Image (cartoon, rainbow, N blue to C red; front, side):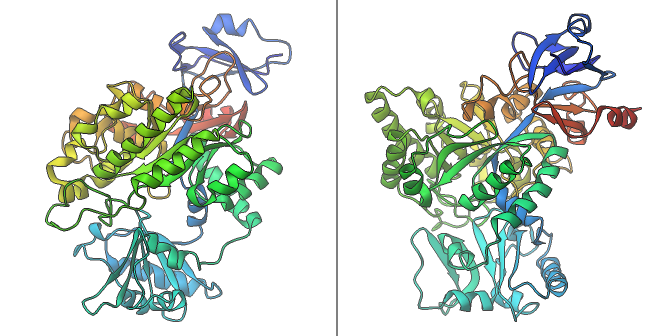
Length: 540
């Protein structure tokens, strides 16, 4: 029995067979028919609900292919220090601390010294001036640096005599004393001391964050946080609260436990399933720890930080592949991307010898933020998915020009990969950027920030079409998840995961893409945000 028919719509199915249609029919959680109004409406039964879309646009549900979901949910309950000056960040910390006197720690995120006037790293002394009685832990916008106060340094035992951890750095002053800035693996020296929240409390936070995701048009996401996130997601699933399709990656420290439990890519169901092993090869552009082939502009001795050597990447990815688990590796600098490709080349050779096809191990590189021109063909040759975040280009373009110079031609550039038919999966890297795919669509199509800069777009040859971008947020993530036979388009047999928009992204001016409004989000045949009657009122 058909439960619902949506008709009189402008429905972009993203199906090569159907293209744009007027109507679709839903039974349970699946689409059972698409086509013109007459042919679909004649399928209605006596109990079928029929709703006219009154010309509104519908697209497949959007998936964010790179999210730190626990971090996103918890970030909504901490201090936001994404500010234009250090002084404003300190004021926010002081105000938050005053309002949360019972909190044992003060935590937050979002600072980025490159966007402050002096572009200098802040210090523990700065934080001590506003909070000295409790430890403070503030992650950078990139997630690859932390700013802590003296109380946090003391609790972690970080002193002049402590050596840098492997793959990390404790920033020090001229006397060798820690300044309060920790890079890469050094972050864990303090982060591991921050009190955790219970799985039940985290699940409550995620319910709130999920509402925000639905308002943004998201029907699924790929998560990169620790098993604590998985435990909270399982609680949501058991309580019937999970309304997003989640692909959960497994971080390196938990590989042995996962393999010992027999987990592999695709384990689970279509609400909560295992994705890939997640590894880090380097840092990020913000703290200048992304691993580069040539040094950063005006820093002749800085090539970034290698977080994991190539040999270890091969060892872990090979071990995972033999157990049925694909691998995804964070790589931002061009040397990091090169090393990851070298590692995947070896793993692909091993898989070929074992009779394992590339489609059976959907390996990914996360970010591919800058690639050396000599490596631009290798993702295609090795059948590696490029998981990229278009909004990073429009957030980082000034910083990239400052530290990478003319090499930025090869940065944040999905066009290079799409032209070679590489599978692309788009995301936000939330909470590093807002969990708002509409902003990512605007960024990919215009290559301009919210001030419409730079004029004409940053390296405009890298701009994408609306259709290419939508596929990056729909069909691309579905392929990366191994769910392309039921997700990513609106056609017979696919899940009724869809988004209703106030305007057609294919026809509005590119600059207006960022102003598109999500009127409704449906996941599995159920409206998770918006109702059709309300949509009519909002657009009348």
